[in-house]
Image (cartoon, rainbow, N blue to C red; front, side, top):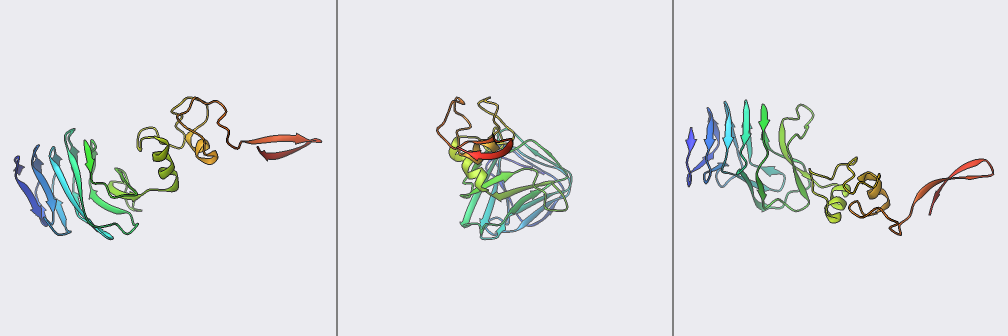
Length: 196
């Protein structure tokens, strides 16, 4: 099934496969939270309108291939703030690409393309931000780009997780930042952990 610009594929139930062209929309439930099953592959070059309310969200379930084009958009319609739980917005057999843009992302959440729900990591999910995520965003790091624990975006030899632990600047020039430092100090032949 091809969904052309200006048209909406909405509701619940099952379709055999779909191509959501640029300017077109796919909306499970279409104004109510529901699940839309796609029996074969789904290709999105348009918009996935995803309603979110409390601990519920629209969901796409794609049996085989989910392809997200460079111009694809996921647009969250938040009728009530999420309740702090992880919310799966899509399941897939195999994923190609990521959404070109994300609009109206609920506050304090991030979009994860390989969320492991305990039975599979073939899920796209809204996941609550951790304390580390919040710190990373505040420091100017980009989630999913240079925010990994082991990333070192300023090449100062200190990974982000160390900057997080000592609340130092992961994008700074690496000079003395006037923050506390942890070191090993030998006193009379005994090693002590010191914080200065």
